[in-house]
Amino acid sequence: MTKKPKSKAGTYLSIGATLFGAFGVVKQLRTARAERDPLEMADAIISAAGLVTGIALLSRELRRINREGDPGLPELTDSVREVRPRDRD
View 1 (cartoon, helix red, strand yellow):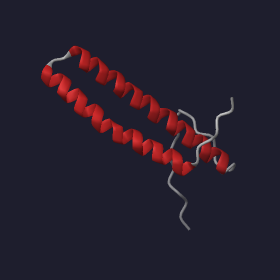
View 2 (cartoon, helix red, strand yellow):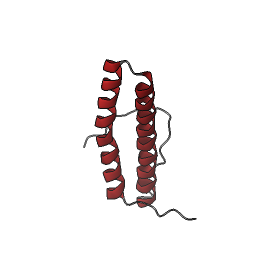
View 3 (cartoon, one colour):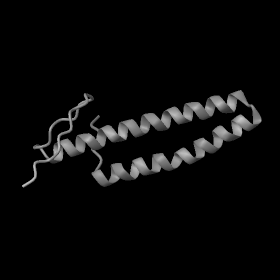
């Protein structure tokens, strides 16, 4: 089964919706802590992990879209690179 690629705008919209869902998770965490409910706390932590994973997947999709859209861009890596100031005319 082939997955249809998302557009750049659609990916940004999905990231925004996922980040908006974080407000509900924060509220759930606060309620669970106030009530000292371990089951509710576990549910909130698992939901937070799902949000983090979703944002990571969407950001990877966005990097893929950017890389395919402009073949002149270098491939992103996890390594830290030296930042040099631009040459001024």
